[in-house]
Length: 297
Image (cartoon, rainbow, N blue to C red; front, side, top):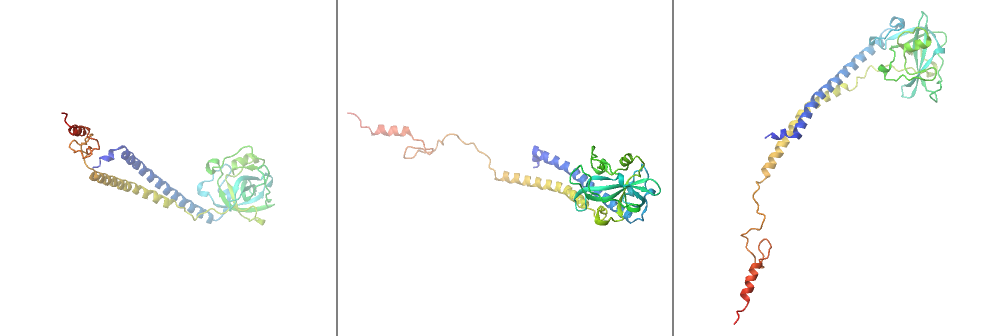
């Protein structure tokens, strides 16, 4: 009854179903883990943004790698901007997705040491080799408040660190690279400035990270698991349909009989000298002609 399942077509279909099911289960768990990671990250962002700001030197030091637990932590830094060694970070977008650069300015701390401050976004120069028009950093001593961020690397950001760039232009915000350029020690990570707000709106300060959206990862996980249940259900439906179609075909079919290749020998010839097969009975006409001829004297 179900011997058709051993045909090549059905064996391949069954194997494909058996492969798809564990794959879909794994994809569902992958989306679940992404959901859990997003929820944990949102909680971390909210907690660190609400925390009371602390001096940046309490959380980092030269050569220090900022741990994930301190990402987006509110910090303060008091010192004087070193505008002479300011650089711009290429290929950065504004809040409305315009291409430009980030302005990275070293801040000489009052208590010693240097920390990098990302002052925000400005439009790029008309060509790739020119330095953009950057509003000057405040003069004199200033207290900066912002979010502590980890050093950028190609692995963490996906941004390729290009060589041979024009003077004072970089691809990544990295304290080790800037320490070599400045020939002095720089605190690990950098500050994403939130205050004071620059006059004139430039540099455009970087928007706060999103800590409210969790995405559709959980919905995608449920969808993958529903697909897992649908595979065997679909396989059973196809098997039953195939069985029904084969039974109907067998019920309509008639056993084949022996069919003679020649005309039926028992078919009588009609008056025109043709039998039922349409052939002329020439022998019959010859006998009639002989009987019609008169006897000779």
